[in-house]
Image 1 (tube, helix red, strand yellow):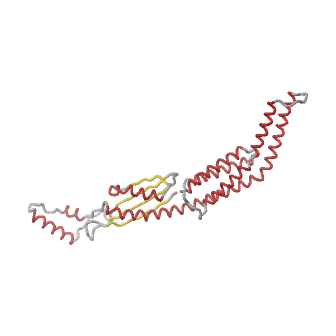
Image 2: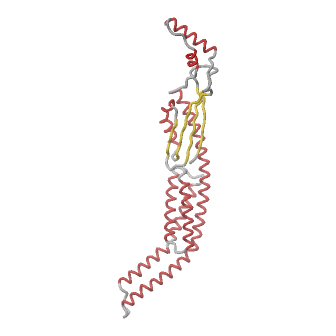
Image 3: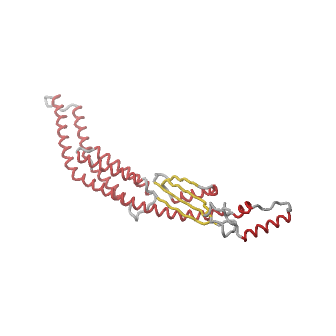
Length: 305
């Protein structure tokens, strides 16, 4: 299922300097449709160690989708030169004096070294773990909300197609008696042909040959198979009703995608069987329309978790 969420969080810097820029932790999560869960991470070096933790957190809440997680550490003044505060300069001077008491030959601090020491140092290790976990949880809430809205839209679309399939199934019912009569007439014609073959071989009025009897039995079996579409219609209606129940807001969504996958496969099988038994152009057209709708349902089911 598709979805997007992002968030930011401020981090504490090691050097206390009022003029220091703020270090911000950013997180983006994008999700697109996929039958399986595929996680991809784009993380700065400082956050690489947290990839297993993030993967575990995402896997516990997502079951399907191609998910890309992108994190960043950005300074609010990454292109400017930081001006040290008087308080910081005083501290550096005091530290330098203490060092030279013990190391008189120590080289004095240069301007570049003072600026480097004045720059904020990005937290690492345990200092990053807590804010990253909190930001990930908050961003995941947004993503799940976005995916939930997408799921509602998909459910509405699938229910519309399910209703169309039910209407097509209902259109087949009044056609069945006509098809049965047509098949009955064809069967009688072929039955007479089989009996005629037996009478030619036995002009004295004897029983038909074994070949003629087999032919007659075959025609009877084919007739029975051809007219038996009631079972397919019953199963189609049953599967469609089950899909409607699964897409109901009150229904549990656990393993919903897999259960719908199975039902769509069964729908496709019944529609194929119905088409193979078709003996009229109208029934063939209905079968084709059914397959189109079922294929659309199949594509949408791939997106449901």
